[in-house]
Length: 362
Image 1 (cartoon, helix red, strand yellow):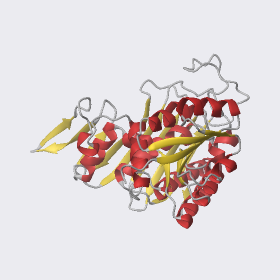
Image 2 (cartoon, rainbow, N blue to C red):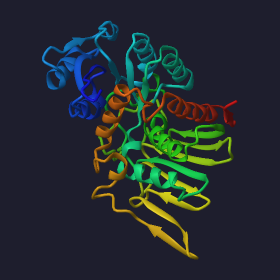
Image 3 (cartoon, rainbow, N blue to C red):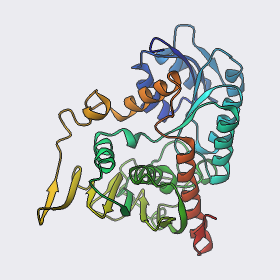
Image 4 (cartoon, rainbow, N blue to C red):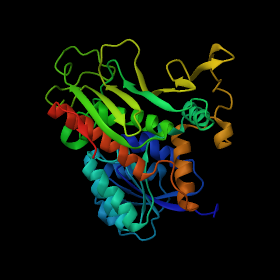
């Protein structure tokens, strides 16, 4: 089985493909990228030339790519709005699918993806690479060992000071479904739920803000944005109560007047100890009647106990673990059920913010 080489089709050849997925896949000996699709043919041709096999095919219509019965795996790397219908079509065509985060623009569309995965029996995963960081893996192992006890409070944080993405369609609500909450808040929330091993929400309260999009000059790290194109929130916050009583506070922003920006990190508080990622990974608790802080060195070997490969880049480990799950018929690290829960909560926060009322998941 380990000698199996999976034939992979790439749908969407923009920034996330070239910046994350294609370089990571190119390092995997059991991956062969044989097809590339993009609505801009030049982008697909460029990706195929750089990362594809010698006979890699190029398409502008993803449905034609899906007709190739030799393709085993499809990576859906398009804007958020098209995640759902492309993924469903790919699953129905008999492909295993890695879809970039978020799962979909809302819970309804995410549910269609989950249902299609169950119906077809094909594997589906979502690109939450923060689970594969050395600090995340170490934290997860400590939690599994019982270091924290029962986790009843957490903070999921994805806060930027002035780092609004000004390229692509990030600012377009129609294409993306939202702003920083669905873009980077989704990573922090997934990481937190995974660490807690709690994917059963009861209700949430949310607020969204669009306070800085028309203030110029912006001081933005990636240059000035066009306020006419800025149709999403610039900050969003959520208060989530899980069915077991645990509480999660979710903070997300692309542009917040804050001096301690932190992205895709979590704080976890339990009955026996706590973990945060505010200054590297820190574990705290009480031993022998004294408070302690443990700060493991993750620079030399890091999570080797987990992966056997030391500090593998998160995106490389994500690609490796995904392909191994397909080859060995194992559950992917990120299951569609877990990703659907993330989408449900994000959707609930947006709906609560719009209605001004709590959103209940039942």
